[in-house]
Length: 564
Image (tube, rainbow, N blue to C red; front, side, top):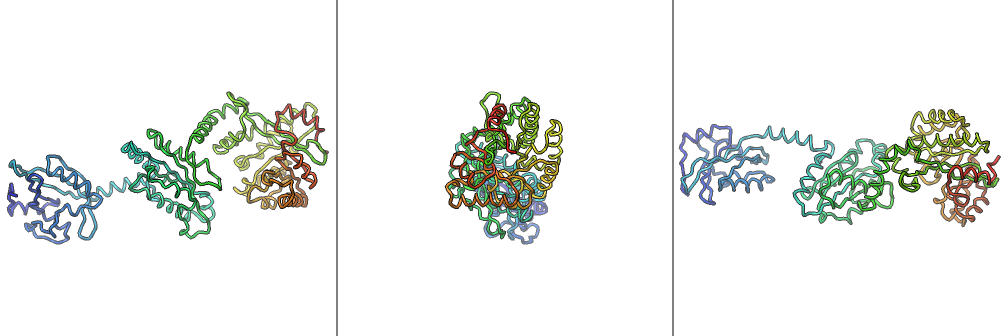
């Protein structure tokens, strides 16, 4: 190819003094010839010192483009060659490889020098912008990447995922959200350093989405990835041990729970997609049978119900929509009502009576349960006062105290203020606690229970035997009564091992001076068996379902009052 202009020694020496890489091309049609490469660029790539004016390019027969960093090559070759051959402009930051394998960022630009109609001459400059670019990349990394795990943080994940979804409207994607089961316990047992190693291991697992989709660390022990549906192996996700934590060298089986949202509304904000995957996660929280759930219409309906309940709960409390129902507890030895348990029902504004199984779990999650607990304590004290004012026989009533309420340092003083307000003797207000409260903070629970007992409130332990700490509670916490839910001892009335276990528990409680209430008693056969093994009290549908207060007052009078 003929040259438009031949470079003399003076021009070479001038270009060789520049601290900018210079390459001159002659372009004829689709053919390109390198005319000149200056000293700066030659020495950068070859690592060899060159004298001024001697920088004709002949290094191993390769042009500068052969030394573009691999990840930048696609962008460089396509856009660069199009601009070089055509009349377009090119201004991009790319990395050039040194002979030793290191790389430096350059700003590459194309300038037209001359054109005789058949051949044009083009200059390409390479400005070293390495420090500025790396500084900018580091700032971006600090903004976009989680410092512990090194992957996208929440905001960056949302942004990059939105971009990916918009760029691929014909692809069906899946949002997959992980949480590490009982992560707080891992931190407590093994320390935060081990906890950090678990999080880093989880980050390595979600990096499998690299090049396919997006992934990130949302918060705490929650991770997320967004992948094309065709790339998701659901059989592998279903395995509890799909992520191998064994090489962390700790004596604890770590598993992850997974919530999935198959994206059927791609225009939703990405944070709402993550929330839908979270709703699926919540659907399996605490389950030992499953660690995987997919967001569906039922979960969607539950989510809407939860939102409606949360929007209405404060007003409902102010308007007195929560009603106390009482379920009688019978003394088997006296064949009479000995006490009652207070249970809450919601007279929902535009629905029938709402079961506590719907709203209590929601209140426990959002913390409203503490306000409802104190409402129940006050309502029960009002009932006890009303019975006294009417000259009815005194019947103690028990009220459930949630974990959140029990760990309020002012709990006892708040209850005292209520009982004093209504003139209720403490022995008439029984307080029910659960095993799960013990596992959270045994020492604090002991302090709270001792404070309550000093005042004179009887303490009941609900759902005895349903958890792992039952006998520790008997050993550590001064309780007055055990409540055994018979659903955990199904078939006890037929004897065998189950009947023996129940009999042994009753005998042990008697030795410890603790009364026992069997709840969930539904048949005459169960009642007869419990009476034969001298169970103290029973509660259940065999006698009565929970009922409004007025009905309870009539029922208690007909059943002969309480034992003496």
